[in-house]
Length: 517
Image (cartoon, rainbow, N blue to C red; front, side):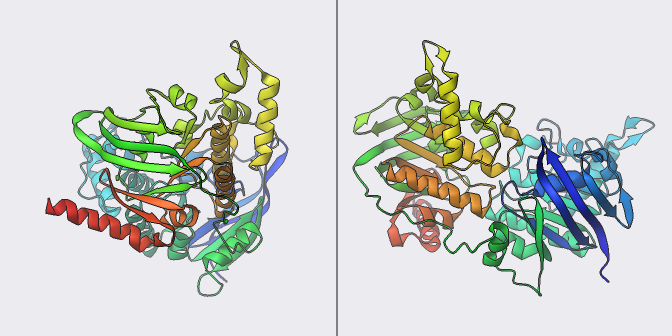
């Protein structure tokens, strides 16, 4: 019989009478990498929060058996003492403290009640070596590092707590391909050293790469567990388990959507770094988008895609900005976000939690926030009835899974939060809509629903720009793509020209041209 390090039996967890987990049973073998898959809102993170003590014993029913012993954790510190450490999707690092301070935050190295800084720095350096960051200076602030390195520091922090079972919740959601590969390879190294890992991820290719087994959760129930080498581990098979049906086409086709006249045009757009007026970030950008057209912005991390979107949307990024923006053939000036909204432009940020939502407020409040002045108020007084009617209409229209528009948006799953952000900008009735990483961190089912909404907007004659780090997403959803590299347009691809090889080829050709200068 297989040796299980963890068993969770008959777990039930409710929120306001709604069962987020309903008789969930879950087992993990010693020394394996177990993946948990499921749609947004399926209960994956809730299950791990039960395990780690975020939801203490008494707030759920069922049993947790860890290393053969029944555990009743009442707080995170209790589970960490047993060697269970969870790394949440939102990194728990203090940006202004040093790497060494963050590694041992809450787990300080002390001598006679006083922090031993020599030991702290020495042990931090040893832990950084284990996660491949041996060249990093442990004394520098964490906020000087990229997200990929910060994710590895979180793992070093977990190793400092003597973790036997490491839980990673969407660890690669904000990472590029190279950083993701480095993190996944580190998980395999830790497995070789006897570590047991649980990974929650929507990136099915990554799960297939590292996982020994996959447990699929749907609507709060455990559906099945697939074993590598025994069961079908293909993405299509995993998706079928997640959504309960075959998903033959991940990108719904747009039909009856004629492409019209140019709605949005950018001419000779130049932007300098917000903190360095001598450093150009975007150089001589020219692009245009027609009515009913979906145009992609492809490129590697740091190419300038988000900077372009933010500089266009009310000059939210950069300084010494020059160039022209034309909407419906008329040059417009958008000196701030309010002016951009008034010119019928909308921008869905890649960081929904920081720039897209007020997490402590309701779905209704968030949905109507950007449209409040122009559509839901008269003489400074909000029409709350109209606001509620529209919020409910859009909740149903884009299928936000919730019982009420008064539910706090921070309690929703990532996919449903993204739908709320999308609804917020749809309610402003824009002509131009820029979507920056619109499906980051959400499952294939929710992605499909968002692609369907994008198609509806295109059919309504909107000009849509999609920024995505996932090249298949660009290829599957866009009519045309601009390739950005080092702040410049490296190429333009249309229709069947759009392939991953062609996108990378445009980037490489641009690099070669710059090298010849």
